[in-house]
Length: 426
Image (cartoon, rainbow, N blue to C red; front, top):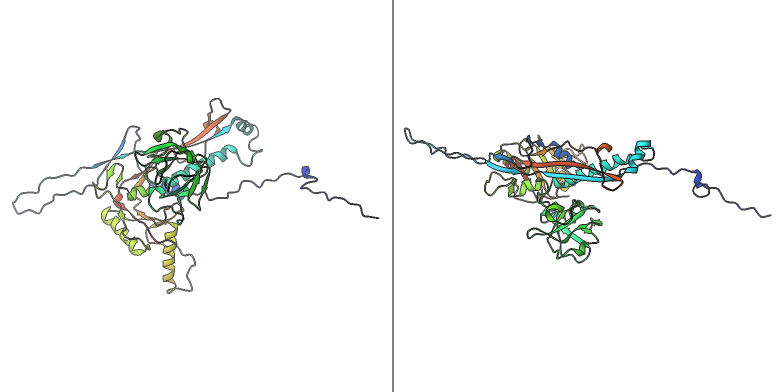
């Protein structure tokens, strides 16, 4: 007699209704830390009353002159006095918004978070804070012009290749640790500007559908509709709901006076370093490996020109790696049996920092007590809004929540800053 056939009851199919669907929860699968956010928070605050009309500061930047050695009983020195120089300060208004339905609010009011892995409102608020911090992290390094990158070549398809991150030639290439593509995320809107003017290209505000880090490209379904976009066009962010004008819809001239701006630009806060030579940073004159001699020169120039002491150094990840390699090579002949595999370079009295956003090849140093500071109007956003902080949407069954953060980086003594670019990386 043949054996009867039967199927084994399984929880995955036969009795699937008996089993629960188990969710582990939300796992953090990416590094959202923004070191620059912490660095901005630690900058010395500028005590100032905010005015929507004008904020200025008087810079004591002119060297007094006219002292004389005179003969006994002779004529005394010609009288002279130097004036201060007026710097004009303009702040940046940061804003991040999100929407949430009335139904989500009603469920939360009736049963809390029992139907959610986490509170939807808290999750959206946390994400909004992360987005704001990432934006400021990028702007921390850039220029007040708001240029994120340049267009590399003409647009022939819906994919655009980029170069010159922050508008700096050679920065952010595919050979760098931090690339132009790293500034952008699918879902961002960007604008293409004709450098002449600058002027917004016709149909020049478009949505990014995808980003290729390997190719340093952004792709959007409407990129090829941009009128006469060409090589070296400015690419700036345009995440406002106004999407038709340069002034209202783009971030052009709406960013922080960042580190590269303060160290390398001729004019900062409407004061020109060409007119006032003391209103400039020390720039190391040579590329190549960063070493103790270059560091010493940065310290000396800050002390001699600005009167301060270099106490903070920020260098790119790759520069840190190369300096570590130099020190390891030296230590092999000193204490080979007590050498750490991953030693950390240090220098007395100087805090050394690095981040993934630090531009490749750069080393920046400053006196944190008198060189660069900040002004902020509102408390630092550490969490999103509560239900009572939301605004009802007009005609839609939902609410809109947002975070505002008016701020600016203020340069007080550029002679107390120094930098080196084109430094060797590993």
